[in-house]
Image (cartoon, rainbow over all chains, first blue to last red):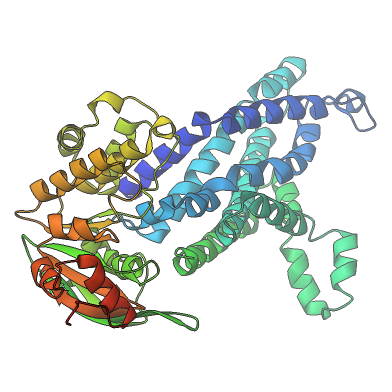
Length: 248
Length: 245
């Protein structure tokens, strides 16, 4: 289903994470931080709850991803435009869609590797008790989809600017707004200037609500559809943007 | 093999390329001459399909670039200005990646990589990271990626810019060697280069095509056979002593 040339792009982009320190820095910081916050000593902590599950892990995943995932996606197109290699790439017989999709998949695969690196946490809860593995698996699926949505947003902002720092900041801001779209402060703010039905639409875009819904161990088609739409929409926007702006 | 009909490109208020038409066939080495910012690169980018023209059309081997861009891109080997490359890749891996992007068969890629490494004298840096290469080698790697699929049309944007005299000579020799069954378009602002390499010269200034003919004809316009004078007279429109346009 995926074109051979897209696979080549995925391979090269995935490898490039490990050709620079970025990949290793990301993996080390992510794994260290998630390991720490999962067992952090505080109210609602793993040990106080006395439950062998990963709820404290999944509670922190969105906040870590918020800063780390845009760091993974920020270079994808900004770097190509800055160094001029975008010209090399887009004068090859490939389409903009293949390029964007290939780069997105490579980044997603990379974050999936990072998530897979958290397997000792799963082993720990299995050792300590008998967690509901269905919930754990769905939680991981939700985390992967959450990362996919953040990456799609991030790659869009990577196409907007040649400057990776600008891409990163815009990525974080937009990920935050969409993550927290259902939270009272953000809803309160936008309801000051938007009519009620638009506020409700905005609230339904909350990534956090859909993520938490999956974390409860229920597969709702609506949630899957939401993430597919989120990823597809931002990627489509990226393709349009890069077609328009590639030569600037 | 290349046909350009009334090609124009407007960037907001600037007319970068203004109604340019020309054609080039097999065996020709067409030199694009012009001052900096004349529209040479923009014209080349439109032929490669990297940017879309505001008006007019470009055809490669009879196929329209705007209609079937992936087909025409496949027929062209392109070396863009400043030879941008993936610095984090190794020379051999990069060339293989270029072959993959060009959707060549696996065995053809291996053969192609070996061929261009030979052709562009890259054997000594084959296993080196691109970021460690000197400017001359970067150019050659860029040239190698343009040749990996043995294209019918070769478009080279300032292939000798920033090279030392020996490297310039090597690149020119290579270009001459490659001609024969290819159509080569190269841009430059070095006048001797046109004389030495090209079978035909086109002069562009301020987006307009001002001259299309052989380098020898161009030279004969000056009594002292000074290409510099002819170039200045054509591109600035001023009268230059000893030049009869």
